[in-house]
Length: 300
Length: 285
Image (cartoon, rainbow over all chains, first blue to last red):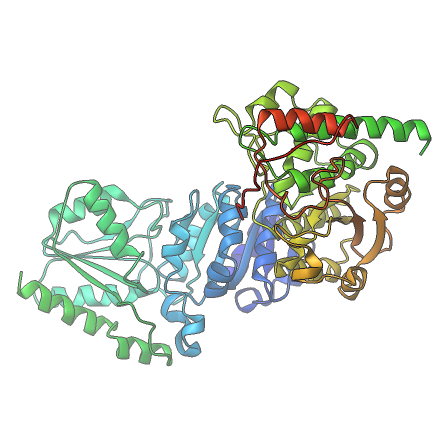
């Protein structure tokens, strides 16, 4: 089962689903002829695609829309905010190549403020799967949910088999009390390996796969903060508005503070290159992450 | 359409204009654009759309989307006349105890979708029209856009998509009152020749006097104008129609009139005497 198979199955069993793309067929290449009457290609028109999806949702349909994450969340931002968000319509917005996944495309294609933008919209929920397995486990519930949803599409090969998915519930690996790494999406695999490395050098680590940064699993995050010496926020997103901001807001709301190491893009776009080279250059490989964390915990 | 039918529509439109004028005090409204659109909303709901108070949730109903949301007083007034909205509720205009404000929202029965940000509802209504076709229903979908609104590129993008998908159950009505917010369209971003622009985007276009019910009836009866094409009606209208003291006046875009001015305008509407107006236009956009 892959993403396309999942959509095929869902659309076949529930005629409310309508699969739409603004001429980005990368993830749904073989799908159109299989779901005739439930597929639309609007051409390179993110605004129109979002607007017409709101119209389809008004008619009781569940549109699942596809385009590159940057163009969707930014070109069509006001349509998402005003038509989908304000309308509280169940449009499912699937952003392709978010974060580092745009690898060599360059800053025009780097969706590294998408979480910040989407979470600011009332009613909007966000799902950032760690890998293909996480994505396929989460999407049936995300698509069936009555809210608008932004999905950071990520079909990287899984390193682990994920547990069952619930919206607003984080997945927690380990119960270490020295270091907690909180992350979402594509960097999960690096974090998972960094956890191993840190444990091999004697640290107790827990890893939190947030899954849905909005609604966030407040209990899981607050417990972690209370129990762990160092909290690391790891994300392929600008430092502003993403996980570090979410954590900061949550702590202040609860009159808490913590030793936090944010690993994010510090007010800069990343160097365009092939994915592994991007990670290396920007310091986001598992090894580099583990090193940064080890260094930080040393001085605590 | 018989002369008697025309008279009935005219008298309803006159009452809609009274409602609009009353909403132009106590905080005010976008009176000019509301008055230019009033005959169109009266005609469409009475003669063209199958929409009734009873079928407002029925998926087989016809749809009307008001993309130029600032003229929503014309819709509120029309809904009162149709019996969808209690007349008393118009007194709640701009009050926190109701949902009747400067732009439309779905809390008011009959409003299909909120608007206010220009250039949105053509794509939203396109989605509705596409679904009606996919479900093999014969609903008509009408979207009223402003002429100034056509500055927004999203309209033209949506038109490309609509005609590519042969959405011929969609009818776009342009309230061509020849004004942007503060200035005449042709003096800022010229739109003419507007028929040719729509035709170049694949639409079938007709142009009418947007205050002449017989002309409206003739043209809308011919909908859809051509198979596989979006129909466009360019309705030439007069901003502020019905009130000579504000007609075609760039400075009567949004006004908050004093009580005595509202009364004077109601008299002017009925041809008693021209109103003396001292309130200044407010610029909100």
